[in-house]
Amino acid sequence: MPFDDDEPVFRRSRFGTNRYEYNPDNPVGMALIVLSLLVVGVVLLLMHEHAGPFARPADRDTYTPAPAVPSAPPADSWQP
Image (cartoon, rainbow, N blue to C red):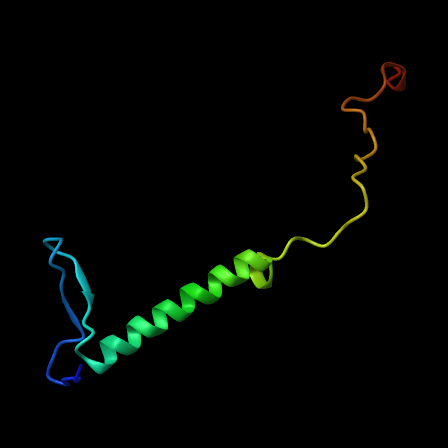
């Protein structure tokens, strides 16, 4: 599988009309394929282990609702 620098990095896909894919015959295209696979693998591993940005939130105290605040003043607070 010799690499050819004259090959384009992207080539038209055989399955779509306007789709492009990495060209494994170009060294940059092959590097992009390997890099994409590594990134996907690391992200899947982080998701599986719940690490990094996929970590569960830290345990917090139990939920306590805010104190009740009346929405209107009591009726006896206004004196004519």
